[in-house]
Amino acid sequence: MVRLTFFTTVVATVFAAFATPIPGENVTVLEKRTTHSGRGTWFDVGLGACGETNVNSDHIVAISSQRYGNGGNCGQWIHITNDNNGKSAWGLTRDECMGCGEGDLDMSPSLFQMLGTLDQGVLSISWHFERMGFTPS
Image (cartoon, rainbow, N blue to C red; front, side, top):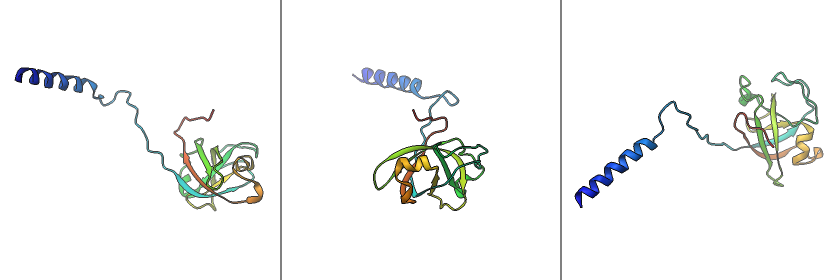
């Protein structure tokens, strides 16, 4: 009986060692998604801080200067939800919003209209960055 228990322990240890990822291998690291809250407003787009020119029919987002930093989020998609009606949409980060608070987003008119009406002017929103390389389908 003792030999069987010892043998089982040794075999389990060997299998566990082979199941452990080796540093440097292609290991997927999961990132925690942080949801932000703030105000959503709209603006007429053009040449953005990311160096790209867009038009009002593009789904464009300007993030606060506190988040913009050196432009590391340029080209990153953001999933935005209107907290009052539950409507959601994706917008592409292409600009910096100087007058926005840290959790606020300024959106192109077409993106804003997917969440509310332009007459509303300001929406209560929650949002998060999608992983780099993500494109909505």
